[in-house]
Length: 211
Length: 360
Image (cartoon, rainbow over all chains, first blue to last red):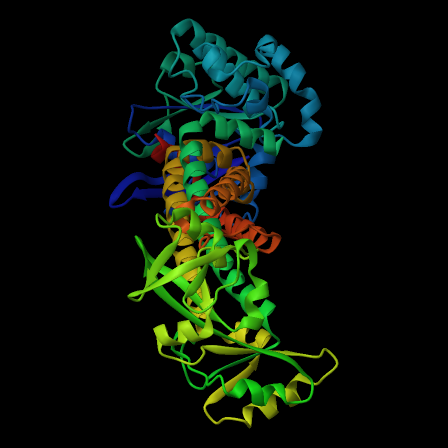
């Protein structure tokens, strides 16, 4: 499903990823743990086509990311994102945020998705009118709305208390399993990471299996 | 959906939207007023010329009719040419009158008097002047006035449809000739509609080597003063346009800078750069259309107020016609599209992650 080969990335002269090889099979729930600044977010950004690596290549669903011509379309159809700070657009309602980039054929099922995530009643509310946990559930709904094949989540519970973290993580795992979605989560929370099928560890730009 | 999103974004960024709106209103109003007033001056003067005759005779090789001197003895010769209906003469000059620094003085042959509709009194005899309705209101001495150290009695007051003339003084050709030391500035020739203007113009030209003969239409088209006025107006409008563009571009740049994370998220979700750019351009366009309507209304009201200010003696007037409104509307669209597109295009060339990080 995802195959990264010899990924090196530099911000200016600062090398943050050193020749990283990384593979994820279809339907797997993978966690990448590591300290802040270890390179998790950069790796996730590269794997998810949001950032072009300085060196190396990434294949996702069989396509080399650097050769995909309509990268926006590819992202919209195949990839979902969940960010630490939810990044909902404040002037749009919950429903508008979820359907912002949705394809027409998936619009009908948004209501069901909202119900499954327990945020049905938030339909017309604005992000600033709901709690942090609710916002993150909306972000999950947005990531799932287009029926992606892969979801990338960068510290999805990093901004939540432990109770809400557990709820959000469970929802994410449950929804991924139900819809056979491959999930790659970057987190510094080892307890949460233990819920994943596979755990990798990032350390100073290098990746290894977590033991 | 697109328009609803745009309107919500504008509401969310209301301070910047208001600033862009105000910049546009000021810029568009400036373009409207500059163009309308200069167009008004040109059309008033060309109306005077076009309503006076079909052919205009001036001195050859002069840059302006103010400097033209044509011998009035030509009038009788021109009258003899077949097809000529009437020949009249005018001296156009300017002089201070009472506290007014500059007032147009028209010395006219008697056959031109009828173009000035009397509201009181009679047409001027020697030593008398007829004053326009606007200037009459501002005169402190309504019985006589001094022009070039000579005192003239007021014979009456006239009203002209051409506001420009209402701020002027009319006297007979001989008195004006004595003041401005010339025979006539121009001769107007009216011809029979059925006769060939070109052939008559050729015959008039043959009468004197020191004259230039043009059809009124041609004269108006090539008159240097009109060219200067319209070029100046175009330049000032262009400067206003560029300033407006810079203002919109600057405010839009700040808006785009502050919303980079929003655009980064949109790109991450798979919304194309074209669609994101069209959201911003549409925000600019909606603001532009509202600003255009506001500026149009402001300009119409301002022009009407200016036209009725006594101090301007009817010299400043103008109207916003369809042609001007259409040109300014196109300028507004170009201004808003460019002002919005340039900053957003620059921002969207960056990858989503950088946009999100910079937005924070």
